[in-house]
Length: 312
Ligand code: ADP
Image 1 (cartoon, rainbow, N blue to C red):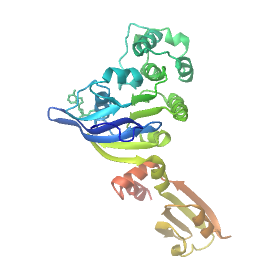
Image 2 (cartoon, rainbow, N blue to C red):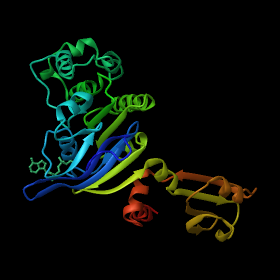
Image 3 (cartoon, rainbow, N blue to C red):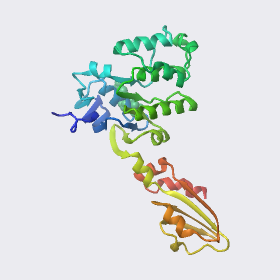
Image 4 (cartoon, helix red, strand yellow):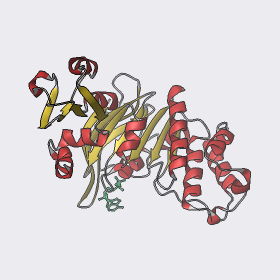
């Protein structure tokens, strides 16, 4: 059947999923599988179609064409069951202003018919004390609202959480608390599908990442592989003149400046370090290029190094 996970292990499976608003092609032909037990990042700039995808998967929007399953359930006919079994954080969450934080959490968990067994732990980790939870939501800051959003999505310990820009509005300390929560969920075998426009967050958290731009899937990457492939910036300084750079294996884009050599290295560091060992070597720096540079290298070779070249 179209849209059914091929091996039975996909937590989310889409086939040709498309959503157009009149002439606006918000999402076109998205086909991807999110495996059970993985943290999957859905990365793209604002307007790329991330929220549209998520809202369509959960049955809040009707697809123009294509199909999808979530936890093996049909996106169109089983949307109530899908929403009951998943945790969902909408983008820019709207809460019920006249209720307290605690009442909002009670109301939402009741709708799911589940026990809020993780609530106390999550509130503790996200620094939402009772004194805050007893206040009306209308008095909350943006960050507090987002924390309530995260807690409501995860408080019933769903097997799959779908989170739309979960760290938006969280300060850096709380972002890290959230990352630690996701790490724990991964260890416990939960599946997380989350959207983000922040590369560093994806690098830190995800097993795999799909990159979406203007409603189209650009690529799906294994983050570990991408990190292994990224270049490292190497700077070497010798006492006296630098040696012939062709004797340095694996070093590319080499620049020699008197006693100093700079270049970029891909692959194993250990062989390179052995090859340069010499009493005349005075200084050595090896810095990994960021994931951002690895992405840029991938999509626009040469672009990542332009700024560095200008800096030199
Ligand atoms: P993202 O979540 O990646 O920021 P969205 O899925 O919200 O992107 O939006 C994708 C595109 O669809 C954007 O161009 C947006 O302006 C458009 N869009 C979203 N909702 C509507 C709507 N209700 N009517 C028309 N266009 C919309």
